[in-house]
Image (cartoon, rainbow, N blue to C red; front, side, top):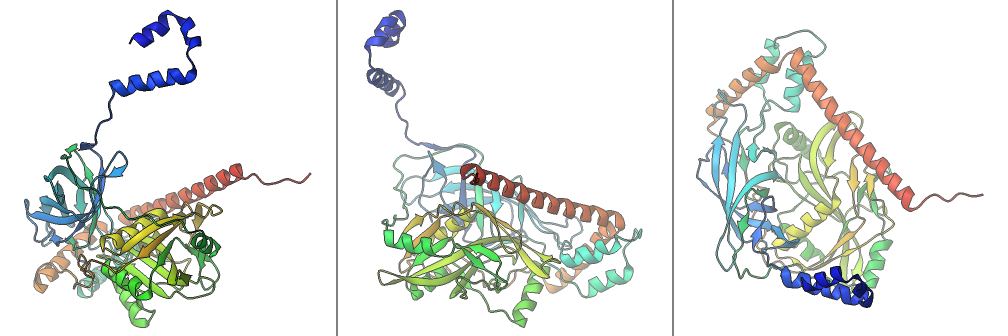
Length: 505
């Protein structure tokens, strides 16, 4: 305080102090009065990801039942991860409402809390975390509660029970159509079933204390800067193309590995090769779409890079065919004698039948950097990453459409991953090939199906609800298209501001 009093009382002394001296005095004063604090807690609102290691179903779960998983992505403190991936995470079921016979509930609900993080050494970390998002399941989350699907809310149900009645003033369901659906239904399982491998984003609702002496966080080693590799990657095409020559996905990942190591790495990470296009695959995909079930090896549409088909295709899907991470890979050349592969990674978040495109199209996540990190995280957790780095492409647009009109957002970088032989057993944390979950006996499911079908049609099979449903879908589509147009205009405006067009006199 004497320093400040002296300066205040005798302003003429300021002129005698150089700017450097004054800054040094202020810095010393602040350092002495506000010492740096160690990161000793996780703030409320902190986010992290958990991957389940045991099944959890609304049909069998009871309040208090344990929930098991491991840390996929650590919470952060001071913008740095606090814990290493793969440490165990414990939780419990808070409440559960199953559909049963459908007399009281059309949809299931499941609320769980994550209560402890278990570092390899030291004391457990007590937390209070609630579910914020489920990444690879068909269920949604609202206010921390996992909400199941409604079995009658399918494309078939929407057309035959609602949109059919839109042109008329018929207020009651068609008994013949109702009888047909009862005899020949495509009926998704309404109970919630979270399989091993389900990725859950968790939000802390209370501050959590961190114990002293936490082990060092295991990080992905950084690759050395390689000018030759950077030149190779920046010389490659930035986009893939459809057979009709339309720009499709963005080349955003690269791998340095032998073909055998590359295939084993994705197998260990729970990714699978996609099936070739065939009549059987098309029929299987159609059924999976209508029944809201999984098709873990669904075919991918053909995309070309430099006129070449992909050498490898991998995907990761779990409880639904509508959501999947998928990756097309082409061999580029060799790097120090090791093959160099480049790929286009995309996260599909939904599917729909499109009249414009005459078939199925998938909605995609706009943020390509999240998909880059998802690929990296899966391979790292499987113990397959030796080092990683990023190569920038400054001349690339940051917002761009794909072949179906969906938009991507990217910083233009290519994530480069050098692989090594994996340390985890293949598919140790996923059950993508497990048989479909079925709640109860065949007779029980038949009765439940009839109850839910009649219940839904008595409420929704009329022109009033049909108009509401069509209006809701139209408004959602218009909002999505308006948002895309606004983003595109904003990106073009920013680009013109940074690089104004040249005018000739």
